[in-house]
Image 1 (tube, helix red, strand yellow):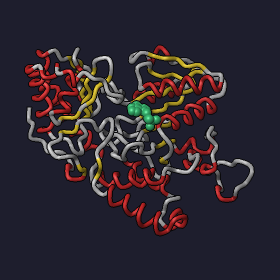
Image 2 (cartoon, helix red, strand yellow; image 1 turned 120 degrees about the horizontal axis):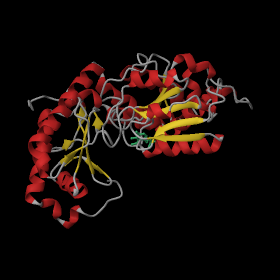
Image 3 (cartoon, helix red, strand yellow; image 1 turned 60 degrees about the horizontal axis):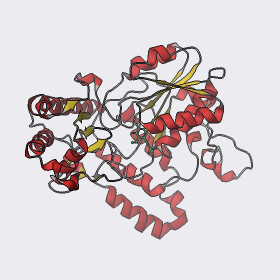
Image 4 (cartoon, helix red, strand yellow; image 1 turned 30 degrees about the vertical axis):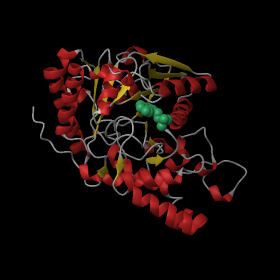
Length: 399
Ligand SMILES: Cc1ncc(COP(=O)(O)O)c(C=O)c1O
């Protein structure tokens, strides 16, 4: 049970002193270089160039440029990824695209216990287009696959349990039934290996603010396999996705390639923060992220077996390294109060109702010593009963 593993690049993020940060699966920390990039964008480009910055500071080209920069982290090629909007909005675009690419098939398959926005958006798309949503249990995919399914949308890593799906195997099963496969990579990108093209995936979405450290509300991204580009009929036909945005034609004509997934003006400052944050991954390949994530989560599970299982905690996350993401989730009847007491001790995790304690072990900046400290604190908080303090029971808006 070696806990002396250093993080892969701890010096590339700025964390508050005396903080063990295990919440990068919610909001990543400030990456080195982001503050300087923001100062440049605000005080030099915006202040000094004002509207000229769209051309002269490369703002207009940023969605495609940043998409290309993160493509290697998800096994995509140049021109297959673009940064735009939020994950929810991109799910709306891609689910609609999927139904339009499979006329005659009217079903979207989603996992009931997936992140709620995925299910809500599928319901919204179905209502808009007169389609149907088939909700499945985590192991219910095969039974749900029939010749009426247009598109299946699943998370690679479940936000609550940390359970991982096999992208290549699932994509093949879905495509064998004639349907399209859309992956939600919010809990994967920047934390574990993802290889969309090796898996022949059709579409993917992911967010910028978790393991990519793009900052609160960072824009999300869209992946579409090149083979689909010309046929894609994206529903949010805004001017930035037009073939010639600045021709101001009265009629819409989609841009060639992945750029047709753009809609309106990008949140430029957030996009610049995300671009700067991605530099933290320079020189680090996804195989190294994958290996270290497996070691860190394995260490946490060993410590759970030794020190936490007997203290009222349960293990939610699968034990096989290939079946989990970079996250370990525990249960405890007093989970909320325990997480609050833990945060007060400088170890930041989070809580998901009704009883799940989540720990995101971002391999970029989390070390084995961090994991050992978290497990030791958890045991101590239970033994001391410190979590019973009333201040740890007051529910905050964000848990
Ligand atoms: C798996 C998953 N999908 C989608 C979202 C929502 O993304 P957004 O708020 O960017 O639309 C989240 C947010 O945590 C998530 O975990």
